[in-house]
Length: 359
Image (cartoon, rainbow, N blue to C red; front, side, top):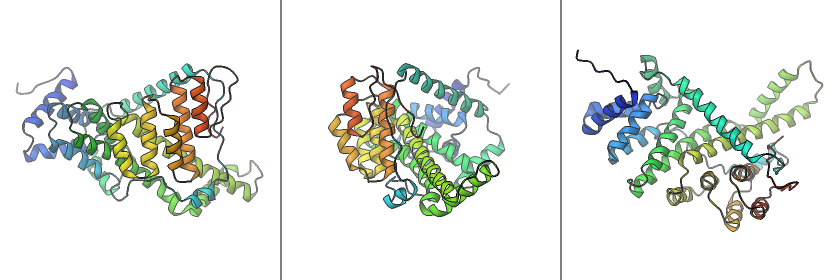
């Protein structure tokens, strides 16, 4: 008789958040908010925090959320992507060509959206249980000791999504300093995870290449006669592709989570303050993500300011190609944009297509 049930979960989340908002400085409530911020892989936690920031924009709440995000990969500095040129050149002789070919642009956009829907459905099915059991609670606390890498990576992405949603949903009511706080940590958390993911290859490149060579030899055993130099060349190629794919995925995820025309001036300031390739690439990606027009001169200037390593060079091209694929631009402007970042333009017909990198 003293229990309440809610037909819709969001109503339950709403009232939990309202209670937290009304008792914000109580020790038990602070503890619950911290627990929610450290278990964002659970749908319940994410929704409660979203409703909580709807009820109150108190700086105390934003500090609690960002402080929890700062615990993720806290042993690492945010990646700069200013990787040593000699290191990059040692694993790649020349960059794969990036160019346009004929392909239906509308079909590409459908494929992108279908892929997003598929990933969302997978995530929803994984996080379908609203009530975390004891083992889940233990996992959410254990992550900060580096016990569960997958969980920590998941929490990093969820923190990025939450901080990005807060910044975009409440851009009109948040103060400039609050926006900068949220966006800075939204960017830093995944960049710390990127630094971790790149650390082995960067710090011990020879060991990483040797490990890849061993795996390649195991796969090719008894199937194909391959010289050791060919195996090593293949291992170097695979390593570079891994570095590119991981970095591109994280930069793109940051941009899609924080990208907003309303927030662009703040994003620009936060990214400029980083004074690194990472900041410049995220700034560019966030502009392109929402289809904003970027001047040819500005694009040339940004591209020229990057450190002279092949990874940053290829990342710019990939971001620009994706932008041209997603948004309609006059044919002349497309040619100018391609020329600005050294992308091959192949105008066989009026349509623009994209040849996948490394195909």
